[in-house]
Length: 513
Image (cartoon, rainbow, N blue to C red; front, side, top):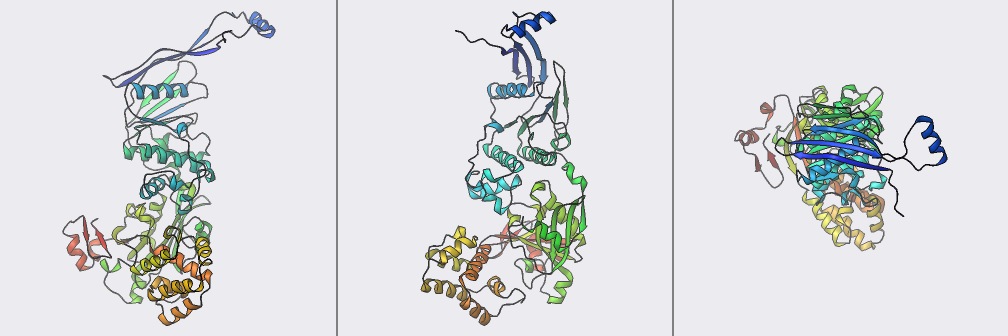
């Protein structure tokens, strides 16, 4: 017996006009009369309805749309008005007639249990870059699985996968529908920013009309019930800032503000005596914190921009940014850059420096006006220690996990543990000494040797974790109102030659700004 159809889409005409670069769409629904049950017959008789005809409902009647390969298209309208039908029709035409590549967010099926760093990008570097661009730039998040993410983080991850696909058109039905409205605005802003940077097109359909400012669409299609439709075209320009940023203000903060967000920072929650702390607030909500401290006696890259100074003068003239943290909810909308840019003049010193690992992947400090001066590769002392650890069976990539290191140390015999201690003593580094003497500016080799010899496995595991931090390449950034006046003479000579990249020594790499 043939199954009876009650619903079908009749496409009168749907085509892409290549010469005029526009889509022409006509779509109509047809619905059959229901089976004539007793109640159906009663209603039909009461209202004079026929039960032997298909009813036709026109949704799109000769709608002409000009959509380019880099447009941001915002499709809004009530549920059931035909947004999804339009999106599907456009996707089909883009593939068939424009012969362009598309990716639909609904088709992205992440592995729920693998660490994020394993599921995106062809290399670790590419994975870090993609995840950082969408706001998943937290060392802890890199190691989480998709199943452990919040709804907002899952959406960010899918945007990273869209970028990875290299498809020209990104198709997104029910865009940000499950997100709270603050997160939706942040995701919308980040989506258009990334798409425009890469020259991609976005077609996003949603019932929500509150994302126009953050998406800043070049094409806005608003669909009402029936045939009624409004299409507006705008200049294809990036949104100037996320709408939420206008509600935020920089204020002087306290160590308590830092503690509230310290759990979102990948490094130690402890900070040295701060010079100044500033926070970014949206009403009473804490959105970000930046910590300025007194400078250490030495810092890689400093001698390339400043002459040698006594400690008293350094404290008067130089501050160091030791922590910048933004609440995960508000990442990717430029708050890190805002925190740095607006507080640099408030630090109270002529110069500000900032050594940072994350700055290699996220140039927020450079966008704020700091200058990238040097990159520091791992010190030879740390490399020697890691070489010994590797020979004893420790995985160099897992040394930042204190739990992993402690478990491995407990499997070693006394002779092997003694070999690790000897390697740390023979390859002493200021950062290793600071682990045992945090309040002393310079380490004492004899006292360091005694502390290390007596250290239990827990302390040794923590020292190995410190060593793992030294393996990371750090970027040294510097700020002053009149940068060229401050440059140390031997660096000025190279800077004036307009050389993009020169190697000064094995330790420093100089960049023209």
